[in-house]
Image (cartoon, rainbow, N blue to C red; front, side, top):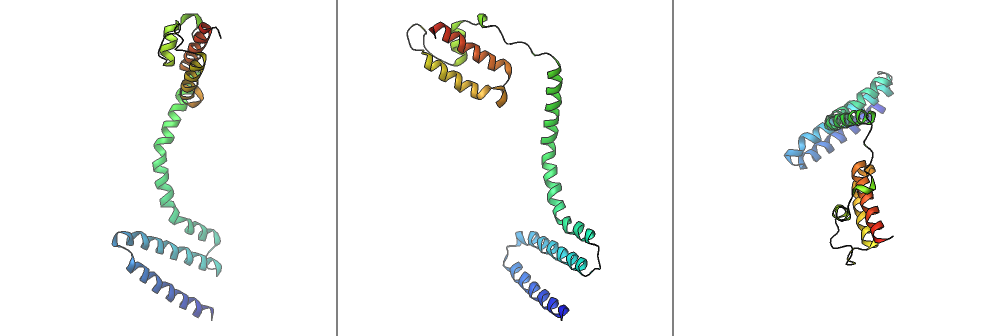
Length: 172
């Protein structure tokens, strides 16, 4: 009785698959045939495992085989990124062993250089540059060049130093 029901189910599934395959454009047929074949293999392995003719571990391995192709393709795409990250980490480890240069002292920067670093225009004495504009320019730059966001310590130190020089010159 069970075998007859399974046979009828298999026949219905075959007719349904054939009808669906006829409606699909030719360029997608190969992919669909692969999916149907993988599904049939999984069902066969599960049936054999359920009837005791195949150990469940072999059924699990067989059921995972269709996914191996996708996993290998993804691994091949991610391998170059992983190698680049690994090289970058090894470079940063070697750079961390060497002492990084200390940030430049605040007295080395002129007011005009600080204005140029922050990208401000105008003159400090004419009132075109205010403490608010200095703070906005500093915030805009530090968000882009902070070491936590891909910048480096030197640039962040220069931006902070430029802000400090201008705020000191403004008397704030």
